[in-house]
Each structure stands twice: as C-alpha cells, then as structure tokens.
Figure 1 (cartoon, helix red, strand yellow):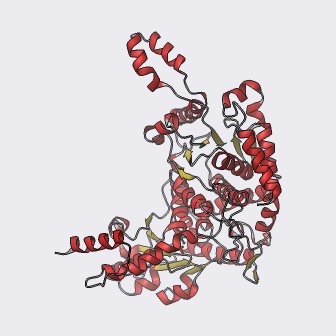
Figure 2 (cartoon, protein in one colour):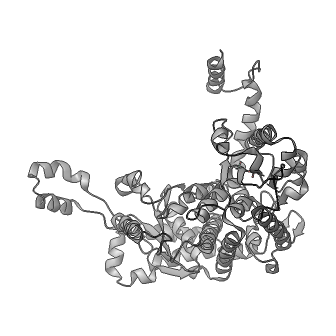
Length: 550
Ligand code: F6P
C-alpha cells in the first residue's frame, strides 16, 4: 500500500470514529438539502445514497481514497483492454460484447493484442442469424420438425446471467421459446430439467467457457444420451450447439462448427451473459430485446468510462460499498429488487461480487490489509420482508441494503405496484428511522397495554434504526434498463476491486476443491481404493461407502 493510500484510509477511519458519525437521521436534521446532495441521476437511473452515513467530508475522503488507489487510471487501463487480470495475464473486455463493431475495443491476451470488437461483432452476427432462423422455423430438428424449446446446460457464469436475463426479459409475455436450465451435477437436477421437453424438438445448448467444467461435461453427456434415445443419433448434429471459448473441446464433443459460437478468453465467465453464452436469452426473448439489453449495457459502459468519479454511478455504488464493508466493517450486504422480474439478481451478483472480490492478496501478491467483498444475499421484495428482513431491522449486525424499483409497472394492476413501491420505500425509511423505546412505550400505552406488559414487551419492539440503504429508481424495467443495471453492477465490482487493490478477474479460490474432487471421485466407485486424507474426510468417505452398500 502506498503512503497516500494508507493516509487516505486513515482519514476514512477517523471520520467513521467521529462521535455520532453513525447517526444518519442527524445528517438529515443538519442538512435539509441532503436528499438532493446525495442523489445521482444518469442513464435514466436515479441513485439515492442519502440514507447512509456518507456526508460531504466522507464523500470527499472516499474520493481521495479512490484517487490514491488509482481508480481512474485503472478504468482507463480496463477500457483500453490492458491486462487488468494480472494473474492470468489478460484483459477483461466484456464491454466489447455489447458495443457496436465500430467501438474499436482491443484487448491484451498475454503478449497478443486481439481486436475484441471485431471478434464480438462477427459472433453476434452469427448468433443473430441463428436465432432468427430458429424463430422462423428455418433451422429445424433432426426429423425436419420445428425446434420448440431450449435445454441450457451450464453452471456459474454460464448459468446465472442467462437465467436472470431470461426471467427478466420474458416475465410478462412468456418466452418465444421456453428455456429449461440445468446446472447442478446432482442427478436429481436432470429429470426436472427435461420434464415436459420432447427430445425431437429440443435444442440443447452446452454452455461452458472452458468446456472442461466437470459438472457441465457430465450433464452434457446425459443430455446427448437423452437426445439420441428420443430422437436418434442425427439429433446430436442437428440439435446440439456449444457456446464456448474452447473450440477444440467443442469439436471433440462432436458439435458441428456451424453450431459453435465462440468468444475470447478475455470474457470472464461471470461477465459472459452478453456473449454467445446469452444465446438462450435471445432465443427466449427474441433478438430485438436481447439487442436492446446489450445497447443499454453499452450506454452504461459509456457513462462509466466518461464520467468523473464524483458523478459516476458505478463509482458511487463502489465507494458506498467500500465505506460499509471496509471502513464500517459490515460483513454482509443485501440486494433487494422490488421487482419479481429481478428475483435472481442477488444470485447473479453473489458470483459477480464474491467470485470477483472475495480475495486475500493485492495485485503484487502481498496480503490485503483491509477486508474485501462482503457476503451478498437477497431476493425479491416483498418476499424478503417475510423472511430475513427481521434480522436486517433488529439483528445485531448492520446490513446495508440496496433497493431497486421501477416507477412504472408493465402489468395492468397499478394498485399492486403502488403497494409494492410503498413497501420498498417503507423498508428503507424504517431501517433509517427506527422506533425508540419511548415511542414504543407511548404507542403501547395509547393502545391500552398495562404498565407491566409495556415493561416486559417494549424492548422487543424497539427498532434501533440508523441502518443504511441505497435506492436505485428508474422509470421502467425495459430491456435497455436491464442491460444498464447489470452493467452498472459489473462496473461497481471492477471499481471495488481497484479500491481494494486486488485482481477482480481471476477465481483461483475455486480450484482446490475441483482438484480434490477429481482425486476423491475414483475412491467412491465400487472397489475404489481409499486415498490419503485427514481423519475426518477419510472417515466420512468410508461411512458414505458403507451406507451405499446393499
Ligand atoms: O469454477 C468457477 C467457474 O470457473 C466460474 O468462474 C465459471 O463461471 C464457472 O466455473 C463455469 O465455467 P465454464 O463456463 O468454463 O464451464
């Protein structure tokens, strides 16, 4: 850590330690303009971060910390395609996937420079032609009949983004073609994934950047067997497609090249929904909606790239998260879209944030001197209110919440939307305002409770309040807005990585478990010899084998 960064961190910590610094309500009392001062609007999205402990001094100190951490030079290198993924020596250029070919994005892959925009545009044109041909009935199943459904097989980034986007984009009208997702290697996941599908009219997409992911490989084999059993050998060539960056492996699997859509190693799995990995999104939602989502994301890229940090939506989200996670020590963070269509947002963001920023070393390999990514959780409001929000309101830890809300509904029940919105605003207000013991006692007395009951029950009904939240508000959740929001979160993740000084684009933490699973697998086969393990693992494996014996 440089001296400037250490000092900027020290300044933030001393601001957090000021007496009364955690009283959000006092900030409103002291500054009647606070809601305006701590609201940003860009790209049709309003971000209110007034309900946090960030005041003018904290904001200035956060921006100073961003300056000392080199966030702006990082963004310049990131958008220039430089090797910001230092441990894998390559750029992270998912922005090229949603930009027009003329954007001219280039990216470093080791010592090579690739024309990311040209590659992305060429594959996008092939995808479009494929999607339109399927929808027009020109691309047909092995028996000459139409393709009526999609089985999407992939895990992690090859699952979560497409799953979220398919749901968000097709929620109202239903999909043009239904998509069934299969991610988990658990054999119990396969039957429900193919339930209701006819192998004679199903297009199977094998989605894997590496095409070496064991779970996806096993599920792809099962799907191939299911296709062959139901539609004959010819169905493999006619009805399977692969979306991958490993074209050697896709051809070894037997998928013809015209059904293979590729992308570069410079697309991280968790940032890949814009790439051919999103083919099922376009097949489900239609090409035009997919393209509108890409255009929205590209507009957000332009905002993040061109806007100084103080007015930059992604930087503001990142700085607020840094303030909460690293300076105030909040170990968790809650993402609450008040929108059923974004029900899977937190699951997608869990991988985005925690796989990207759940790191313990700086770029130079030395230990990170601060905490890094918080645990992300969330679901759709109002469901959350009836499950975990109890803890967020009255639990002992502070959980910053990000609310998302569209002003206008896309259904014909305005009363339901007003009730939804009232709940979103009320949750944020309740978190901040709280309810004091005196207020509870007065309310109970007014309701006729006896003094003994008040003494006994009132403490349980107190809300501490002063709990932070941010709100993202936008006119409508149209395809472009979905693209803008997802790109906004992706950029938030990248900027946080720069604030923490870590590599947000590798994921070595997933490797050891994979390696050990490969070693254990043969031990579980009938007659498999036991391997060398710690006592607990060895005993569990032995017990597992004994319990499986007939
Ligand atoms: O194991 C983690 C991971 O590599 C993720 O980063 C990725 O999204 C997922 O597995 C799936 O990888 P692939 O697309 O290569 O099958």
